[in-house]
Image (cartoon, rainbow, N blue to C red; front, side, top):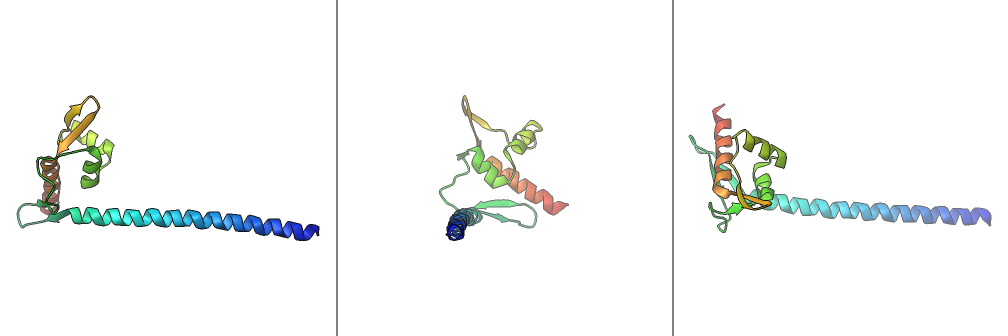
Length: 127
């Protein structure tokens, strides 16, 4: 009887551990599917065209205007730079400056960021 009881406890422990692993994997799958959707949205939002002499960034979403103010999160998504890299490049005057919106809020003009991206693309093709 003792052995039978120990076997049941061991099986219960394995079941619990397996259910936990399955739950963790399902959560990971859900996160990955969400990220995949977000990446697909980002790819549809911006299309980079490289004409022969100048690079242009074409915005596919008509609701976005060049005069839009965009926050750091979107700047990071558009450029692929980290927050610290952006501020470091601003200090070195190699990135557009932000506009103060208040005591603890800043934004950038969309057209400034798009121009910076176009310049980077253009410089890459000249190398």
